Length: 402
Image 1 (spheres, one colour):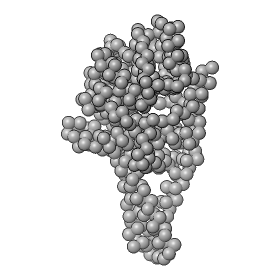
Image 2: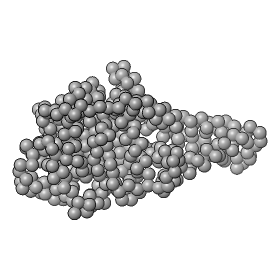
Image 3: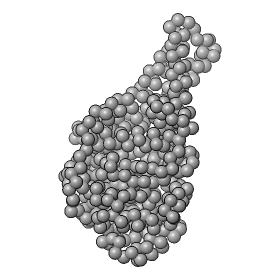
Image 4: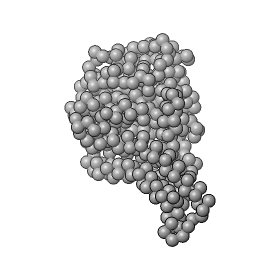
């Protein structure tokens, strides 16, 4: 029995990490053929879509950031029933800066239903618009040439969506490792075909490729839903490593965990909705990317829980009957060393201690911790698409610009 538990634990750990190792190798191979931007100016009108809710601390700064873009755009602000002065400040700023945009409009919803619902309503409002939609978050700041660079990608007729890469301020513990790992994955997937996950902080797409019906309004991860919808429409969705935005992370570890759990739940629910597409021959290379993401974000975290159960049972058997001898003793010792490495890597990342190799393993383990919490919340019927705002993030951004 003890031997079976040792073998089950070791096999389980191998299966847990296998998708990450395989995909890392894939990313390395795919990135050898990097994305190339043409640099050509694209004569397509751009409408900036800015969903907001209680953003009075940063809304003026955000509007100024958009207005400074080297390309002139239209602006659509959609407010999800803010209870502060967001709408008042927005309208006042637009009145005082009437020449900032080609046109501007503020839609105020009667009730708050979540960001994805607001984005879906905005898409309905823009149903007759032909050009590029650039969605951005109120707490994301980008360079003056960001939209000019983003629009240049669309000289390639196969490009349907382009996302920016995060350059976050206020990092705590393992946030930098987490950010770098997932940016690397998204770029590699983009080189190969498309990435199903992009950042809503700056996401640009062809207006005719995404309709409101493509979005599940009872879930979050609207940016991932848009990126995937673009690929399902037959176009590529890519992340540009040189197109950067800056935002501030929550100032506490608990705040960052809450943010990752919320984001993780949206991505998991999105992948589960896409399960019928995992083997769709029409999707070519993209179906393999979807399968790998399903493995890393859904299957591996669940396998980790099963493996932890095997580890607990193994340690209980050792306490009751001892290590044994010969081959059994050797296997127990190997399993114990592996457990120490895994637990140590997880704890180091949790407390911000960075050691090469261990940091990578720790980043993966902490991510799976958040994903399992997200799945547990979903099973309890707790949808996180209606989330409490991180006030410290808005205050940090406001303070930094004073």
